[in-house]
Length: 471
Image 1 (tube, rainbow, N blue to C red):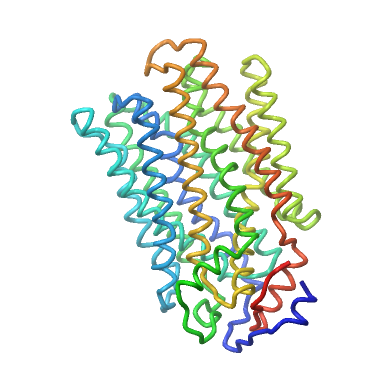
Image 2: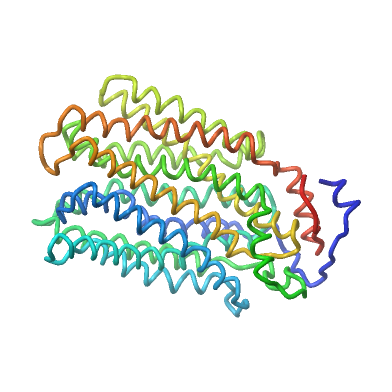
């Protein structure tokens, strides 16, 4: 990389705000509250909406699989649009990304409650309602999550600080999963009817979510002048495509995410079914969630230490491979509550570490794209990454509901041996295979180690970028 910098043309930009490190610890911690707030709305949909559609609304598992697949694909194509619109904004008094994030989060909270309601329609009407409400939710989620994810890239370029912020973000995400995973079902059971309990419980969670976003909005700042960092040249659609499609580190993370996020979401979506039918007690769901997610919160505190010692790539690969072993053993070993809890916890903690590092990967990819092309597009770059998350969510929904339909699942009834095996396989075997593929992808394709990135960050901090091919 250093040789490229010395021998290829370098574009100067003297207007760049150089304050990219040593930001207050309060800001870095507050940034994680954004994902904490996000989780109180996003995780509800991933963990409980499938069950709401099948067991409360009475929609067949096959139809639910179709609903999730269609809506998530639609959502995925909304992210680039959201990114383009956000990139076109000029930074205001309160920054470029934070105001959009805050306003959209309030609208997202309202829509989260609506998705957990079901009017007394015919079956066709229920399916249309479910599609329409969840698609609308997805649009608002794009306009909330894209600016939030882009925010990290304009707060700092320091490798260690980004690792710390990645760990606070993952802590916020797992913290939200922990609280919603433990509290949702007990609160739901306080109501005489789940048809009433679901929207009321969702409203409580969504309100907490907005509070999390407000903490992030209030206590963070955009230190890097995103508009000035682009230079004075007029950008075209060609620049957008160059930023995304010539960014090998970004594409490596995108392909990895297809498997890591689908693995995590199948775990979250099937846990309620596994506890209710395979273990025979719905009451075990909050207990197991508390154990696996509580341990994950503790585990991700190791991310900055592991990254400093081994680097982001090696740390991520180690976590993925440990998850492969734990999830694989959980499928092979006969169902036992104790071995299941131990192995699912190890697998979840192992997956939480690379998922946390992913956020640092994405911020590095944004800066690489700027250095590589001379064009900085935080929103569109993050949207390209988020596209993969939406497709991964679609895959998870298709696998989860699809296996239920294929194995003859009947809501609120005694399940066949085939259905129980399908639930177990979706919970354990699918994540094992998915994490193995993710480890292979990041190992073979990701070509932006920390030392190379530090040189790139130094160029950008001094107002330089290179137009050429990265090797």
